[in-house]
Length: 166
Length: 368
Ligand SMILES: Cc1cc2nc3c(=O)[nH]c(=O)nc-3n(C[C@H](O)[C@H](O)[C@H](O)COP(=O)(O)OP(=O)(O)OC[C@H]3O[C@@H](n4cnc5c(N)ncnc54)[C@H](O)[C@@H]3O)c2cc1C
Ligand code: SF4
Ligand code: SF4
Image (cartoon, rainbow over all chains, first blue to last red; front, side, top):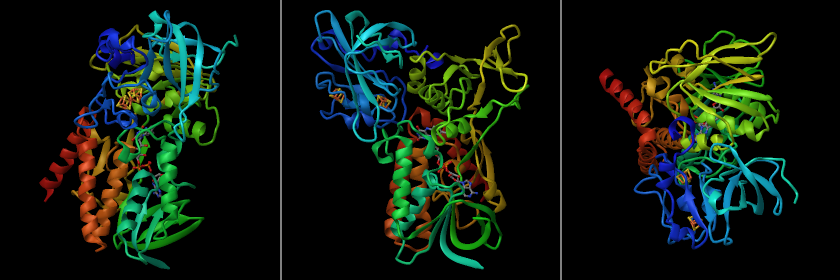
């Protein structure tokens, strides 16, 4: 259970998932942020005002997925590293997952990196389709992996180091 | 020689820095504001917080603690009305209002008209057999080694405490290339923010709630620990012992307010569990029972940098108001700060703090 081991359950996740219809349209943000804590940088970062933390900053974020354009600004801003962008329209059989990453070395575009589950279990080797650092003093990297569609809601971390050059 | 000054601030963490900036904003030309910090640099806890902070934009949320600290320190250094003294430990507060400071091996004396104490907190320790072995540290010490001195502090760590400090320092240990065997927490639930816990979980670090350290062992230095499961009443369950090998055990079992100076000044103190220890009894301007002595930040109850900064502003403007500096501005800013504090503390994670502050308030009213 989330409050005992830090791993969200299927029920937790269900509450924060966009509809299948929206997922199939293209990149969209998912905030895996389940606890009322005093925090709102995700909402101030969003250029199209798709995220609200209302009526006060202690609420959990609510994303308007019809507004979200999948730009990933909130992924970089979130201090909890709790937001991911998933693009189910990447390829017929492949999706991408953008993960906030704060370890060295950072994998480069074209390399393969090991994807990990929410429990840290390895799920396979996936191609890095983009790796860029957020601007200024933020320093968080946004690494996007191409994964089979059935793993798009499973891969949530990258094992640091040991990347494959292929 | 005794130097007369208008305002002295003790402690250059987020609370003290904001207090100094607030007071300077209200102060007339020629005002004498002195900030004393015992460390070599300003910033307090922020100098080692490499993670992004929570809160709202007003309290720099989303920014990394180190950069928040640097921004505040730069602003204080740039403010002509504030004199900064680092490597300056405030030793004593005397009945006649004299404050003594040890700086550069010299013992200096000041007579400030108002005083703001923002000394922060110290780490708690835990009692168990073997806790004096080399290799057992407070989480703060490990964080300083790693993030201030750039030393890899261990190869394999067991962290005790799943509050925010335990969770954050574990994550930073992973970033430094240290293996974190597990995080052990006696309570049945994670105390820190769950987003911090999830970061560790997806890096493969098990968080073991309902467990504690039974003993630590090692010949010359730490070689491992024995963990044991706890029942609902926090009693160890015989036969559940498990050995985990590690070269470092890190304790993140809480902070308590660093209030020695307040005791010396004979400020009324009261023990409030929700605020993590004995805290000064304060009024709505954060003034203690001793007229002219104010407090802000962790010394008045363990909370967060975000609230420490806002409390700093409140105390800074309150002291300015009491000094007769720009009273209208000061009063308006005091009210803004109170509102911001209410907002920060309004949610469920602020419930504990609200309960603690209510107790302090009750005890103040009971005493007058
Ligand atoms: C690992 C960790 C992670 C944290 N993460 C967050 C977070 O994400 N968000 C958040 O909001 N907060 C966070 N905090 C909490 C935050 O750092 C503290 O609440 C905050 O620093 C308190 O500010 P302060 O100014 O009261 O005390 P401090 O920052 O402790 O500063 C007190 C200063 O006073 C000085 N001092 C003490 N005694 C004397 C003396 N006698 N003479 C002169 N100087 C003295 C000390 O050297 C110190 O510099 C974290 C804390 C830790 C340890
Ligand atoms: S991905 Fe961009 S548009 Fe979508 S919620 Fe995040 S910041 Fe807003
Ligand atoms: S910034 Fe991240 S942790 Fe903060 S409320 Fe938004 S999603 Fe949650």
